Figure 1 (cartoon, protein in one colour):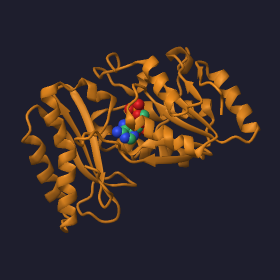
Figure 2 (figure 1 turned 45 degrees about the vertical axis):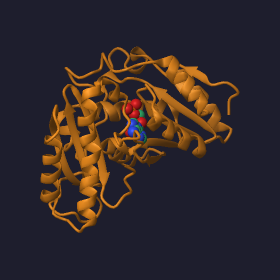
Figure 3 (figure 1 turned 90 degrees about the vertical axis):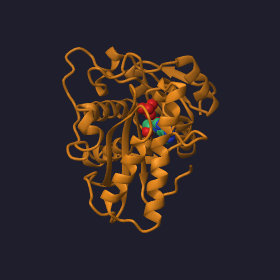
Length: 289
Ligand code: AMP
């Protein structure tokens, strides 16, 4: 679209640029991120490239989605590296506002999606999804996209954003993309840089337990408790692991289920020492491990 990739820091400038593109009939696709790109991010951008004339990517480490004592300060950041990677996949605009631009003085309005944010990460990270939906609503109002692409690695986030877009009548298509994994099966995450060499084997217990659950499902197991017990036992056998949750939920309501009926997801959050990792598997889907 543009000859050279542009960097935009101001909301007003972003809005003006998007408005004029929309007025000339261009389709805007948008990938919101917190930066420190890996192949997971790049896969969303490639999808965005296919779906729009103009591909916008935001890089913003949003303070309001981190709780007290979480890793906001030490979250990995490398703008130059991200800029080069984005350029390589044909991003047109990087939108990277600072905190004052996103949350000006007297800021006091939030978006809250009620029920699907209660379970899973909502239990251990109170306020997290309120931060996510609020910043996404603000980013959507800045970038004015026609289509936005999210990773299903953050399954609850994907469901929550779809809910918000539908509930608030936003004129926006939300696309979900499969989880991109390392060769050994670990779901790619900017937080994987926190893992020390001796912790990686333990981190592998997440994806391996999903594979085990998939095997049980394929042999006909439909009792959630049996699968959950096997998964917990498997993860707990690995050193340094501390389970935050292991749950099987309906993919629409994200409420716990006893029996695997309709579309259900096995969702995990596990701490490996100080690093909290998440992963999930929608029963019946492919799992590339
Ligand atoms: P983040 O920068 O971690 O906030 O992630 C930005 C987007 O990338 C979100 O939509 C994530 O779900 C997505 N994402 C993160 N990791 C992966 C992955 N391993 N595979 C696919 N998408 C991912």
